[in-house]
Image 1 (cartoon, helix red, strand yellow):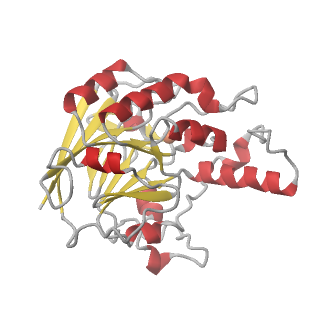
Image 2: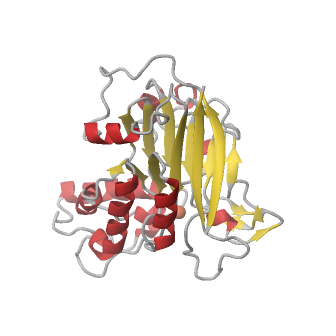
Image 3: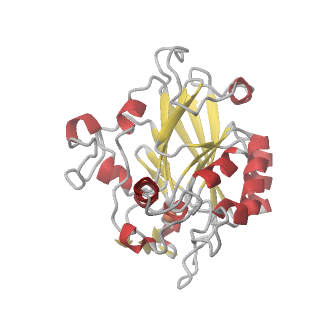
Amino acid sequence: MLETFYDINGQAPGTPADPAVPASADLQISAADAGQAGSKDSSAPGGKTLLIAHLSDLHSHPQNAILQSLQVQRPDLIAVTGDLIYGARPANNIPVMKNNRAVLSFLEECRKVAPVFLSLGNHEWMLGPADKELIAGTGTVLLDNDWARLQNLVFGGLSSGITSHYDEYRESLYKSGAADRSVLYPLNDPKELRSGLPPRTGWLEEFMNQPGYRILLCHHPEYRDRYLRKLSAQSDDRGVPSAGRNDQAENLDIDLILSGHAHGGQIRLFNRGLFAPGQGLLPRYTSGIHGNMIISRGLTNTVPYSPRLFNPPEIVYVRIRFQ
Ligand SMILES: [Fe+2]
């Protein structure tokens, strides 16, 4: 497993965190968490440095090597950018996360090292309320199209399009009476929800307007150029920006985006990935630092027809030096 370190500079916000600015509903961070994040006097903006461990694409395969790395590096925060599990609908009506107890234990172990923030990837499409409760029970802050504040840091989590659409679809079935709430995963095959669905970006404007250093956990690196431009200028009347008008996202009010999903392009030749879902052949965003975005190559593999070649799993550490 690769350990990759990125050193970046951060602009400290001009004012300290305003206690009058609430974290969004249901995502209050406890005083104990805030204390832990600030326990190394270097961790907060306006101080010196902050070390973030960035984990992505675990796909139900927690590994001791990851925990050992975290225990050695002792990051201030852990950001998990989706595809925590392998996304298959269970044959029974048991919460998916109950079939992923090793993953829940892994999150608990991560939480012993530092506060953990998690956003949802495409493999989390089926997660429902019972699953989200199990995740929250580990002490992980789940950011499902939502944001939370920790001191001067503002974390957002942009869920995969399919994940948000399935959530809404399920809720519509419950509300119309087409499915009973005791049926946890009422759609047999989410094929019709699968490709090219845009993420829900309506909440991002509020996130981008928060004072502080804004970090977005966004599973899909391709979302940045497609959807994350200055929302106020480009959004349609539903608050959803249209794709494709601008290939470069220079105007973002986001300090740092952490992404995964591309698995480094699966096969790497001449330091370039071969393909990635959502980007096709010779994709642009598979690894490394691209402006305000850092992409993890991910921690495991889910593509059965193509092993990872010249492309070991990767744990990313981002050290932010605040000025
Ligand atoms: Fe993914």
